[in-house]
Image 1 (cartoon, rainbow, N blue to C red):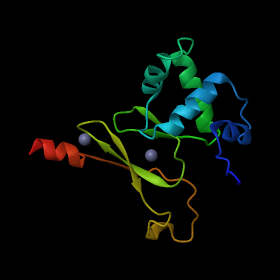
Image 2 (image 1 turned 90 degrees about the horizontal axis):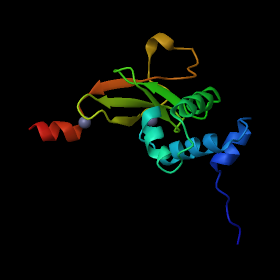
Image 3 (image 1 turned 30 degrees about the horizontal axis):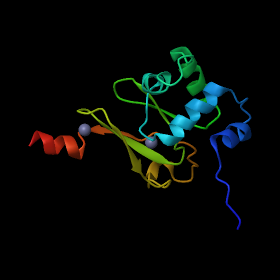
Image 4 (image 1 turned 60 degrees about the vertical axis):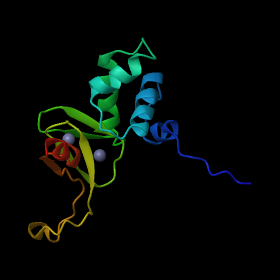
Length: 140
Ligand SMILES: [Zn+2]
Ligand SMILES: [Zn+2]
């Protein structure tokens, strides 16, 4: 039986030409397993409990490196917080003002923007803000 190999974080780092180090692998793996758009603080809090050698400064360095390599996306929320996302395909985000959650919003490449007819869109940063469904229900 042929087992289809899953593309691992290690393979992706190598493909992107990034020298693999333990913190890089660990942080990238964390982002691939947590599509909740964590900030560097969130990543640090989750990982430092298992690995006391990890510093917040290295989390900042690694996320910046991963972003430059195109492996993760950086999304700056309306309150100025930097969030990281290992889901790099076209999608927008919705930020809830109440609970602070950042939710993926799927949308297609062709947004029907008349002003851009004939142009090629290479990146998109659709950021919506408001109050999510769960928070609206709680407020009732
Ligand atoms: Zn909410
Ligand atoms: Zn996302």
